[in-house]
Length: 268
Length: 271
Image (tube, rainbow over all chains, first blue to last red; front, side):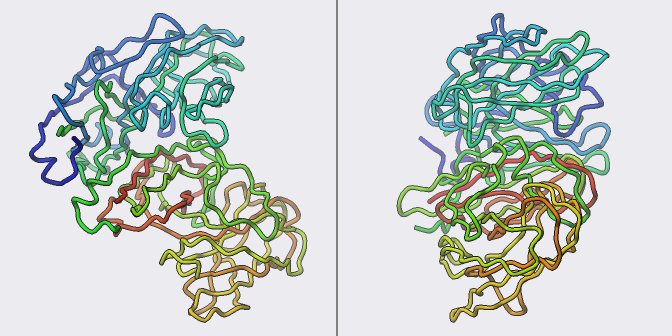
């Protein structure tokens, strides 16, 4: 049963989690977020990738995910989110996502690599596997070292309307470890159902590696800046209580440097 | 049926739509910029090609996705957050009602336009045009020249008055880049635009592609610094109505000149 009243958020079962990671790169950029899943220092511990390019489905039981439990009945919603200012007091935002799928490390070649992703879980924006509201990122899991090169990366994908041979693109000038880059989707597309292939136009650096992620954005929060001890906090009403589907693998993209957050989930 | 209680707002929450736009061209302090044509999520919009008379819009590739409610229900804004990556400013969420193409940027005579009836999405959900404004949007960078833009329109009064004049609020610039958006100020006393009759440039803009856009502002966010946003929810936005077939897109009023990307979400409630 869905929560449909304000009272429902207070009477439903609660689960609260604290999240804290260190070791973020100081040079993280506001439009190219750090992905915290693979960072080892903190809580939860670092998550793992996949062993094949076709990838693996990720869920709440995987190491790296916030370990929430599915409700005994009913639905789960994000009902509170707190985030202190980062240590350097710079502006920061965090994007709470459900990580659906990851690939193994891509080969560092400029030829097309076949992906043929396995079926994503039933956790798109509608709780289905069609891919609506599901997006793809390229994640640099090993730092690229100089000389860095400008490159374009493309994916061939099937969109959430089941149209194949769509093209997602990103263009960058090399990248740092733990940085991630979102793919722009093809004209009019609103999500990715599956990925068929990946191509680098040039290698981002002399050495370094990347992998692919598929995720569903759940909520975005910005920090309060200007001095220490500031805290951003939002409630079920202000967050519009986004749905957390059963077995969601909750983690964060961070825009700029911050790594602490607390979230509360309400179930009913 | 209208939503009239907090519980009604909660019961109608839908899932958020994600926004992530790459930085486009450099901006100019105070001059609005739209990432409509920038790569990202949603995908870059293609430059419209409906001709001078334009087309009324019920959807357009590049818009933030919007799904109509079930029959008999209304849609309201429930949460909007949009973070600029490179500078402070303010971010507006707009409903795109009409746009055109085919405007000569070298002609200095009046170019006639017979706009079709705008969609019934003005401030009151009608076609009268109250709360509907005009802007000139650049989809291909302009060349030399700083023309004054004059648009002849019919206003939204109960007894509509034609021959009204709108002009650009901010001075135009030579080499205005893609995404530049010049809002037009209405004639004194007018509350909106029902239809458009002509556009005139006072001087050549030499090259480039521009469009007239009719839009309804829905809400404005404060971005007090780089990477900062004061989001709005159903209550702080005033439970603003989003009529069926709304075509949401964003407009950013920058503080400085730095090319800027955006990250955000848009959530509605329906009931």
